[in-house]
Length: 417
Image (cartoon, rainbow, N blue to C red; front, side, top):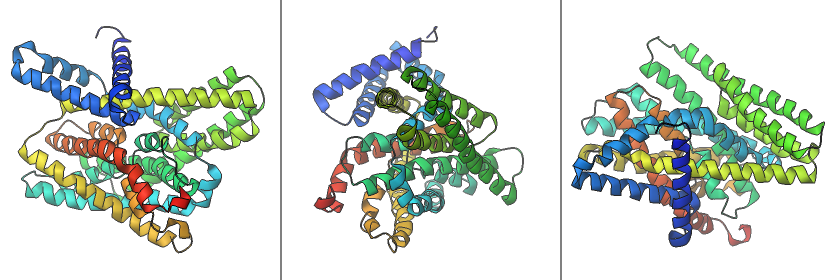
């Protein structure tokens, strides 16, 4: 790949081809279908490489995948657009009505899931002969704890769910992502950093990143809102929203603030206050269509990359067994971390009763977890974490993504659907 457009061109060609194959023959949800076809293609290439090693197909594909910095591509580029587009379509009034439930799920829920995942992973990994320190296990717990808003929102687009439940699922997935990324960065610094980190400095780092990101998103979104309200030119207004996303996210990266949280706050402001009070009907139509299209294109590219990432994952008998154990472990941690907050919230909000199975199964893992594990130093521990994380993500996107609609219909009364 000698030219800057070669890799984007290849990904878009594959997304178009795999999307057509899925639409024509499989009929799966777009994101699920892309992952399935990319995964099957990867397995086919590995099989051909095993039968005809002299062709060098496996090495060529692995070199290509290694040349793509998945972490930087997602965490420093695509994620800003995806989170902003997702937050734009969240009903702020419904979200505020469920603010305590969402905040509890996105804070205490993430901490609880991290602890359960870490404890279980540490026990089973060492039982199977992997020398995994406690801090490394905590890093795994943090990177696998958040539900991926990209995967969750992609699934919700095709489902008809009550506004209350939709606001809870969307709000939690958007905010717990930001909280978990900050928690991961703190724990990864402690586990793999060269400088010692105290409890006080770790908490301070967490608060600065999280609160700093929220403040940045609020002010950037507010400035963009007044700029949008001062004119009526849909082309320029679309450019203003693009400037908001790229500019605010760049500032967050520069000053080590939480870019994901900033994007969520800014997206909520523009998608609610901005749409209501700062745009004409023509601008609303063009702006929504633009961000919807951009969201779909980036989603397709992201899930193609997830499917092909199997080419750089290592497998052996014990790693496969550990991965198979990790899947129910992560689901159990999700069930507990959702069940405790929801049990408390149900005392004030009767609607939340009976939603634990739905929130548990709708908590999909996705590209963010893969990107976080790839950001770790290249050690034996990272290889273990990457394989286990990838297995959990693939199961989540394919199995949970396909069956989540059935779970929602089973556990919600028909009158609410």
